[in-house]
Amino acid sequence: MEDLDPPREVPGAAADIIATLSAFGMTSDEPILYQSHRADVYRVAFDQLKRRDLVYPCWCSRTDLEAFSGIHPIHCIAKPDPSREPAWRLRVPNRTIAFDDLARGAQSQDLRNEVGDFVVLRSEGWFAYQLAVVIDDAAQGITEVVRGADLLDSTPRQILLQQLLDLPTPDYLHLPLVVDASGRKLSKQDRARPVDAADPVPALRAALEYLAIDSRGTAATIDSLLSASIRQFDPEALRARHTN
Image (cartoon, rainbow, N blue to C red; front, side, top):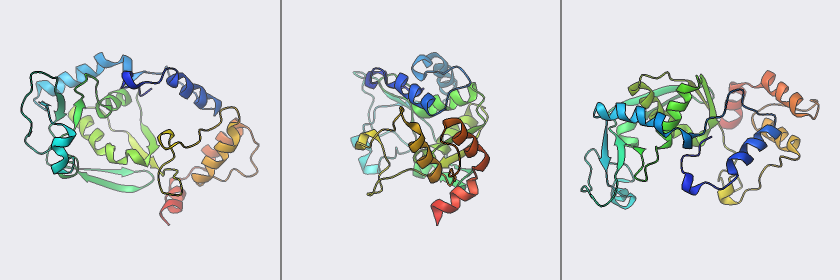
C-alpha cells in the first residue's frame, strides 16, 4: 500500500482500495505491506547510499528550479538553511538507462539531462516513492511490474537505484491509460466516476476490452472473466491496438 504521505492520507482510503480490489477478484496472495510502516527499512537503504556519498542535502525549492525546467542542475543552487530540514537527492550519473518494456518495446532515458538529481528523502522526513518502491519490490520478490504508462518515466530512476543498491531488476509492462475526451487520464482528481464495487462486472468487461481482451461469450462472473483474461492477454495485441 503506497501510503507514503500520512498527513495527506484520507481516513479509510487504504481499506476502501483493498475492499474494491477484492470485489474485482484481486486479492493479495502475500501479506499487504504498508509503506508508511516501513521507514526503518528504507532508512537502511538510504544510509547505504549516504555512506557511499551518492546522496546530498538540498534546500532548492520548485521556484528555484523553474529556470532549469524543473531539472536539478549538477551543482545545488540553494544555500544551506539551518532553519529548515533539507531534502536529500541522489547524485545521478551521466548515464542512459535502457530497458525493454513488455508492451512498448525498447525504452531509454538520459537521466542526467532528462531527470537530473532526484529526491529520495523529502524535507518533511518521508522517503520518496522512487526509493520505497524499489526496496518493496525486492523485499517481496517481485519479478514483473505491471502498471500504468504514467509511471513509465519513473522506471529508469528505479532501475538506477536497483543497480546502486545491488537489487534485482524486474520486468516491466506499462499499460495504456484510460483517458477522457480531453486526453486526461481518468482520476478522482479530475472528478472521474469511481468504479462500482457493488457491480464490478461491467467495469471489468470494459477494462478487458481496453486491454484487447474479448470477453464476449464469457460468463458474467468475476472468476470467469479473470480466467479468460489470463488465457487471452497478449502484450503484442495490446501494443498494436494502442499504437495504430
